[in-house]
Amino acid sequence: MKKIKDFTSYLFVFLAAILLAFTYQLFIVKNNFAPAGINGIATMIQYKTGFSIGYMSLIINVPLCLLAYFFVNRDFAKKSLLFCLVYSFVYLGLQQLNFSGFQYDAGGHDTIYPVIISGVLGGLVYGICARHNASTGGTDIVSKYISIKKPYLNFFWITLTLNAIVAIISFFVYAKPSVSGSGLSYDYKPVCLCIIYCFISTFLGNVIIQGSKQAYKFTVITTHADEISADVLSTLHHGATKMAAVGAYQKQEKEVLICVVNKHQIVDFQDILKKYDDTFSFVENVGNTFGNFSKVK
Image (cartoon, rainbow, N blue to C red):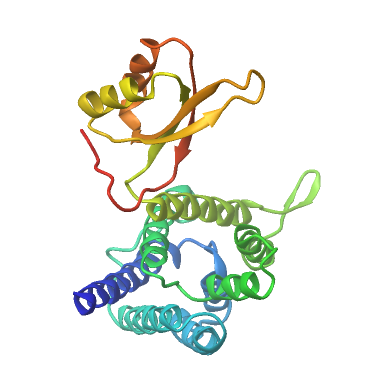
């Protein structure tokens, strides 16, 4: 069973790498903007020098994956290396084919559309990789290494800082000065496009990482624990955990119920609580659930 699960995990990483290679070839390289991370730098280098993103990805990411193997996590490093190798070689293969009829070339006008498309696809790839303990290489590996060495640093802020540097560099690569009536002016659109790409891909990636098992946790302080838990079980088909408690102010003995329900069951749960006096409750968002939790429709 474990071998099948491992094979499936590597297969998802393999397919995600192919998808990202097509994304770069079809929506990014023709539209003069840099996406996130090291691949964004590779894109700018190809734009300026013609040196392929595929080769640059190999030069940068193979040593980073070796670093991750020894200093981060071996499974993470092997899957990241698989991703980088597949992505690089597929991209190099696509360069040898004539894809001009399929490439989205905005001609500098409606560049927001390829950014949105590539951001969505990039976010899908990032989310798949993260869920299978892999990465797309580059800044993801650097961020993970820094967060291990400096655990007090937030992984999100590390990645954001690295991507901000890429966005700033893209200004000097893509922005072309123009002369207007008020003098020399610069086009900040490449920087804005890079930021939009980072936002879309990061947002969608986080949604995929959280998964489809989002829920809400109710904490209920009451003297009717048995009745409420019976109602929840019969109406919402979810169980509850009951604990004894003592009020800090009146020293009155109460019971605490903890119950996790599906997102669409919030109103139904609140309707159950309304039937019982001497009851207080608060609700929290649950990003994901593990174990014995059914998604009740």
